[in-house]
Length: 203
Image 1: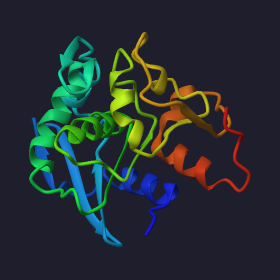
Image 2: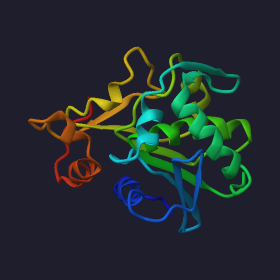
Image 3: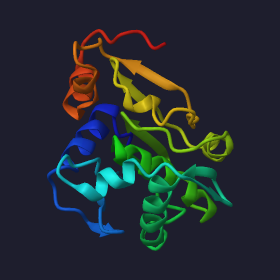
Image 4: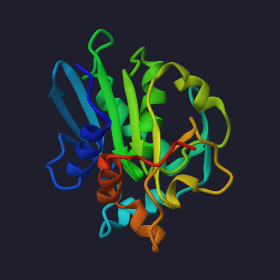
């Protein structure tokens, strides 16, 4: 079974309201769901009223990890905490997919790279409006064998942040820019653009 991008976007949206399977590091909410023989791992994005999420978003001190290279500390420490749990749940012979929106997408990307070190290769890593995680090409090389996309809707500024960071893979552009770029970042806006009958050409 293949999980569609639309379904993954819906899972990323649901992560904001559904109870987490587990919470680590105080604010990293991880949702696990079995669907068609695939384990779907969804990371919750930033909650507007969660100060811990915002502190993680803005913790952009660079920390070098021996397995995925130099990354922004907030995303790296959150992903490390989640991978400690995930490595005991996921299996190399059972397919799993990672996804998330915004902060959740950054955590999914970092976790996908860290799981490679544990011999756990994601069948896919699909993110929506995720900020950059790394500052060089190391993580991109680690994830070269993991299919997936980094989606950017309209003029969403978050996938271009932090300044100076590197994308682990090229962005895929969808949607038409709104008058307010911040509204382009909303998960509902991603869902609307992905459901559009005639998508904007990929840049």
